[in-house]
Image (cartoon, rainbow, N blue to C red; front, side):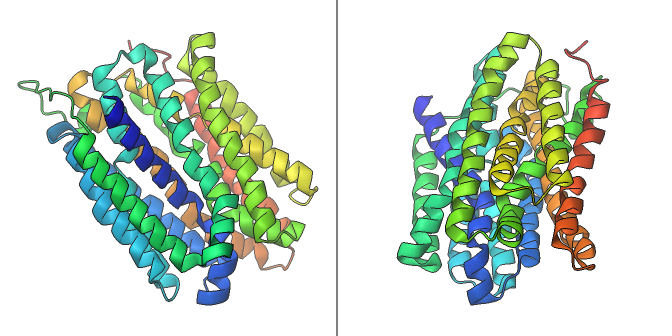
Length: 392
């Protein structure tokens, strides 16, 4: 069990790294390949879209064949192959293709560990375990900041990607060798489709917030922090790496903090509401004053990272509604909404920013961009207020 979880968490470290690395790679990819921030917004959006589209088949595979083969083979072929394609890229389209492959490869990693938790532990501690995995896995987010910038300076970005290819393949091999699948559950006379999950009373009221919650942190940390800090704060690659590292640390700490808070307040719903209210305040502050100074910018990014880390609490809230034979499909459906929200947000952020930039005022453009990330969280939180704290 411990080895099963350990290598799945290592895979999730890679997943977090790949979704965060473009912010630091932006300057060198623009110089060498002509890839603009808008191009990389598409690349990262494609990562999230591929990841999201894989969630339904991944859920089926987890329930039918288990996490070992599902995670191991997809991570090897998609993750390892995508990292190699990235290292060979000669332009924006090469990066697009690489990120699609990496998104496919990373799509089952977190859900593989969640599947084992849901099948092997009581629902009461699912949220704590889920938060711990994301907290440890978020080390990949940290590695995609200042350490990545240092590796690029020392070895070059292509050599760094080839090294990541090897690491990804080794982790995938370890999962195939050491991960053990829980015993499968078959409920006679129950089909166990996604539609059965959506018919669960009160379940769908959780979906709008889980759709919106992760978008701001993912898009800002994964892409827009770099161009924003460069344009309004004259930051170079090293400073961008330092500031995004601070945001990454806050995301790690947030994930670890949400688990104990969940137990202290005695309700997934209360914790999620409190955290997302503060997230809204941080995004509102960024929208009001995107050029207010580097220290304030760093503090607000850290707040977005810390309080935007409520995904495991929302996942635990949704998991409480799921019967045992629908766990695989259920947790991947929740993840589908979260990742789809991030992907759609990234895709739409490109035309939103382009339109806002047409007047030639970068401060106004980034004000619109942060407001764009704020509005869905407010809407999702408004719906979530009417959700049930527990299944009927």
